[in-house]
Image 1 (cartoon, rainbow, N blue to C red):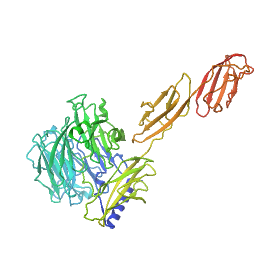
Image 2: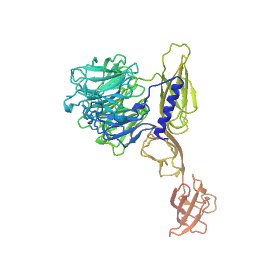
Image 3: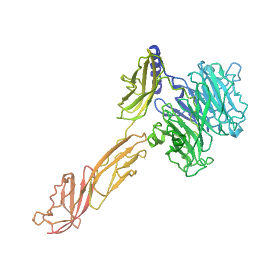
Image 4: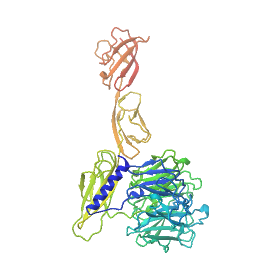
Length: 635
């Protein structure tokens, strides 16, 4: 199903909800496209796809905005703005000059660009940009206004251009945005250089307030960036070294409080550890850090997970787990870490033509499933320090959690938030599951926690409606059903000859799979030298698993037969195999075939042949297995 058709369906669904008096959750389509790095584009509906049309060139600052239905509007690197046709946006107001709209940002400003929708004014946006250390941070933090009605609907920059935020201080690289608790206005947060202050500027229908909320942040320095948690209650800050800071944030007042330092040192190389990217999990319980050692060379990058629900600050520190080990390959250094609209976390890799991905970021440790080569992006290079900078929306009044699941396993859906209402009547919960990828289907369930198994892999649109006090609220989101691997141990050899060994392997091998055998080994095959029961568990790149078991029996062929009529050891007998499955050819010592049978019956006794050494050749026409050896006939 084509993305444009999916968007059309989504519009019909939302329109129907309004007609029914249902209050939909905030639209999330504004974040459905990312343009970043070296002409890299990523579209997320119905599933992540490399977009080949990008014009952007950026090392670090990237911000893209789409409309509520997910249609691209424009994107920027803090210096240039590109419209939806990937042409350069111009100054296009009635009194403007018509030249390309040049912003005062810098291509090396980490997270130094942010697009903010102007509340209450559809089609109007503010583009915030910060300068970089390479330019002495001279331009500070500035903003310009985009009016999408200009230039025939492609948008243009108005007379509000490169307005500097009044802080009276030199400003750091980086800008972060969080929706106000009123779900309309937006907080834009920036930080001073070595002055111990962060500034929360409020964007309202009246514009950008020039009277910020000033917050003390005791450990700030000349480098670092901010990241809001999805619920807006926390801010994480990296200062460009080993220190990671956590703060509380009040989305009603813009206040930043409760500073804490999570010292993420590396026991192998203390003091040389730098955090170059960070991101919260969708449920706010985990924090992912992209780390480099040392910072200047950007080598030996790794991905670390912290459990923010571990308890005390000391427990959070000690909860660190390496999700992706360090590597000395400079082409695999991890930098940008961003949560996509699909709830997965994407990881930029310097000089790589793939994006990494954390498939289940709410899960602890290895269960989160990191894929190094999750999304191929052709010859485009991943961004060095940023994939997308986007205003975090407030969690919708109705929200639910859903973990990605494998085909055949029911997916668990749980209500996360419900609207406040003074009614004493218990709320009702109704779920609708996509009958086809991208559509609201007829399958339904009720209750705050439900399970649903989808019939095929793909991306599905799931809708939850909660009725509280006679008012209906709804939320819809995409969920992904991943394929389960097919695993079959090869049955070509199930009998082990005495003194020999067998190599067990699966019929469906893939370099993207990981293996765990019954003896704990993790190679693609297992060599066994004794009969017994053996199993393998295979995990694919989505973290889905499947297993198979095989029973290896012992088997033997005699090295001597004595066809003398005493009833013992009279014939050449295959012990452990089903003889009828085998074709046999027997040769004398001069190489002449003296016996042939297509379905052996364990009856060859060298009749009409002299005593001596003979050579056999058994072949299983089903499995292609071969057995060769010799037998001596003694009379």
